[in-house]
Image 1: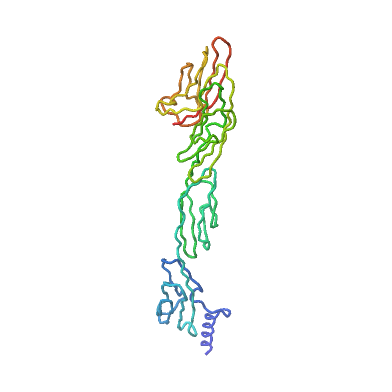
Image 2 (image 1 turned 60 degrees about the vertical axis):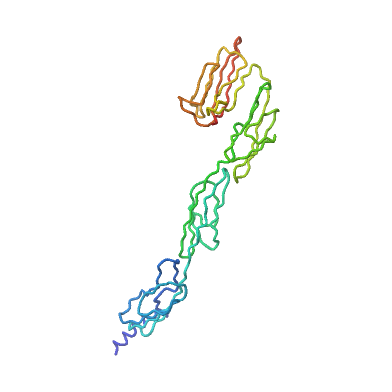
Length: 331
């Protein structure tokens, strides 16, 4: 009799822990639609135990595990000699769904910022930038990704951000011309697809100036904001001055293919040297008829701004002069 009481007391202790009912299955379960999911009794049962399930898809018996095909309440009843009576338990299975990716490759204007929006305000997020907000602000091109977290479902989405080069750049912000120069040209370097407008009304990359002062040019590329630049033009009286161009285009179209100064006087000494922006010499000549064809050792030099230095002594006098400036090479 004492042995039977001890056995029954042990069974009651297993069934009740400080007044808590034994849990056969979790209170809640969640899974992502399309994944394999089950509700399962983890406790050990004897072979002849009776297990009955009531699920959204019907009644299922004699199994410790059922497939969680539909969202809803899952009930289980277990009759076993291991317990003093039937054990009832339940769980709520929640089904989540993956959201559709919504990011698209886009473009970033030079010097600007761009907002990337993952949308779906009710979700959780994780960006490649380690941010966890719905929207992030970027200022650099590259590849970005975001994880959209909807309960048990995780969807990854990526996009490529390309940099738009902008509308263009000034060749120089200041020009000085002699009053007797036949051609007084100022210009901007314009990228493909850009539109420009000068305060003179011109819409071409180069304009002929007629007066001293400030010239303004407004340029815009694609959907990027417009930019406005200014160029200061000075005119002066020159004596025995050289006319030195500020750009040339060595593309073998027989127009402006060489860089050389136009001389208005005779010189007893003349030296012209050209170097790149790092100070490397790319051309030198002691001849007043020397011309640079935009090559170095037979190879075409890249588009860039180069530096010239021209030293001269006027013939019949000791007047020496050194001229330094910049020359833009375009193709």
